[in-house]
Image 1 (spheres, rainbow, N blue to C red):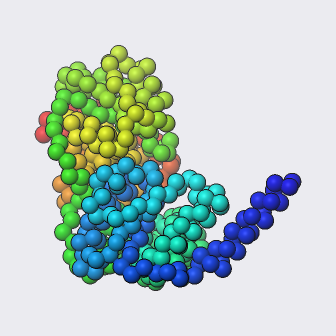
Image 2 (image 1 turned 90 degrees about the horizontal axis):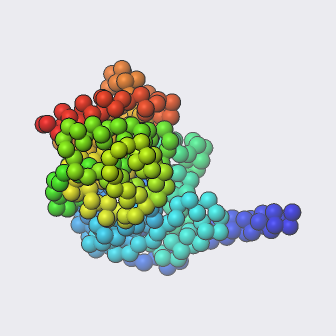
Image 3 (image 1 turned 135 degrees about the horizontal axis):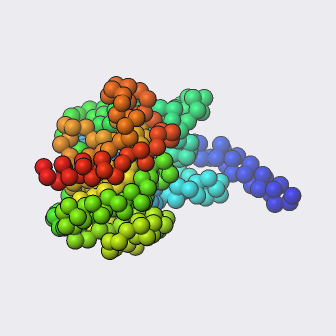
Length: 376
C-alpha cells in the first residue's frame, strides 16, 4: 500500500518535471548540432542506415555534428558500419522506456544536450519515440506525418503539434526503403541516388548455408522441424558442407529443435555472435534461409542469395523487395496470400498480419524454389 502510494507520487513528480521543464526548448541550444532519432528494430535500421551518409554529406547539414539516438539492439552495427558519419551516440534500451524513471532519465539526458535540430524519420511513430521528440528541447523538430499503426488518432494529433515540420507521405502503400528515400529527398530538396540498402563488405561463396529460425513474433516463425527437413533436402541435392544456425540467445530453443529433428551435423551459434560477426558469417554463405526478420534485410544489403519465409505480415512494406532493386532475395508466402492480386495484397496485408499460418508454406515448395534459384 505504501509502495503503491510512493510510486504514484514519484510518477506525478516526474510528470510535473516533464511539463514544466522538458517540454520547453533547451536553454543551451548548440549551433549546428543534429540529433537523428531511430528506435525501431534491426531490419528497420538496415533499411534506413545508408541515408545517414546522405545526411552528413548534404549541403544542408554537412557542417553539423550528428548524434544518433538509437535502439541498443543494433548498437554493434551502427558503431562499426556508420562511425564515419556519426559523431556521437545515445543508446536507448527500448523495453526499459516503459519504466518512468529510466524514461525520464533518458529524456533529461537528451534535453540537456541542447540540439538545434532533431530528425525523426520513422513512419510508424509511437508514444515512446514521440515522447523523446516532445521532451528533447530541440529548436527544430522534423518528423514524418506517419500513420496510426502505433498511435491513436487523438494522441497522434496532439503529438503532431510538437513537431516544427511534418513531412507528408508520397503514397499510402510504399516499400520502407522508398519511404525513407521520400523523406530525405523532401527534407534535403534534392534527388538521392540510392537504389537499395547496401552494406559494403567483401562477400565470398562457400559451400555453407546459414539458417536464421528466429523472429520477434510467433506468427513469423516457420517450424524448426521444417528447417530440419529442408536442410536434409539441400544436403542431398547440393552436397552442402556446413549448416550454421544463427540468432539471438532466445533462438537457442529453435536451434535445438532443428538439431533434434535431423541427422545432419549443424553448427549452432545462437547467442554467440555479435551482429558484425553475423555479417562476416553471412558474407561467406552460399545461401541464407530466414524468417521475416532482421537477418533477411542484412542478407539483402550484403547482396547475398537469401530466401525468406513470410506469412504476409506487412506485405509490400518490408517484403518482398521490389523487382527494380535487382536483389538476390526470394520471399515465399502461404497460398492464401498469393490467391489475391497485387493490389488486393497491399490493401489486405500491408499491416500486421497474425491470422495467416506461415506453416502453410510446405518444405517441398521452399526446396523447389531454392533449387530454381541456385540453378539460375
